[in-house]
Amino acid sequence: MSPPQQPVRTRHISLPQLPIKLPPLPDLFLTALSVCFLFSSSAAGGKPLLSKSQILRFPFCPRRLLKISAMSLPGGRRHHFANPQSLSDWLRPRLPSDSFASWGVKPGTKNVHNLWLELSEGETSLADSTPPVRTVPVVTVRIRDGRDRILIEAHQELSDGTVRSRDRPLSEKMKPFEDVDSAVARAVQEELGSIIGDGGKVMIVPGSYRKTVEERNSVSYPGLPARYELHSVEAFVEGLPDGEFCTEEDDEYGNSENSGVAEKAVSVKKHFWRWVSADSVKV
Image (tube, rainbow, N blue to C red):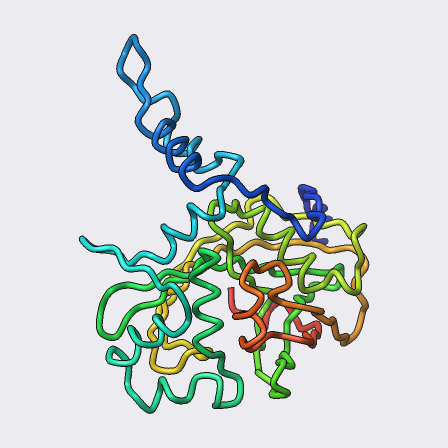
């Protein structure tokens, strides 16, 4: 006889109450405060008052300060994209002309307004190279059920009416200074919240966390190489249907401060989900 199966232990995380608005604070004050934390020393040993990990968890996460960092290119010089046009002017000579011209035109692609929003929110960074390399930290949630199945996003319906194939577990770009648990909770709420509501529990399986790096050409931005830092966990989510289902996203960029740019970006309107055997999903 085979030994009885042991129950899977999980840890619970709370879904965030979205949207979360950060209080506006003067840029000068935020900069001075950050410098103070970074360079202050104790009188006794000359050691920093805060470790690097503590600084990264500093609760304010000032949005304006993050934008300055996220929209700057690595290397000796600093470069700021004041608007999508300045980003477009910088990208055009660094990318194949036919590829760049297809952004937002080829079905399933996004446009330069999307990339500018990603940069402004700190979700993406660009290397100052030809072609540039887009680095994206992504949280991937392998949602399981009691029948050894994994939830897969089959495809998406975009705001321009096109359909984009996905065929992957729930994935979401991470925000600056966001830990994995917070990113999981936000991803579940944003993409599945319309069907599970605010009360659905998310239970992450301890020990399931994996980090991998994938390098490939971007599907959303043809011709732009991408480096994906994937933070993967397994989880159980209460309140999901047993069969295929669809969730709606009212406004993907609803919390953005750049509403004028967001209106011109290609957004996701509907997500289509299905359950598949866990054995068929790439780890």
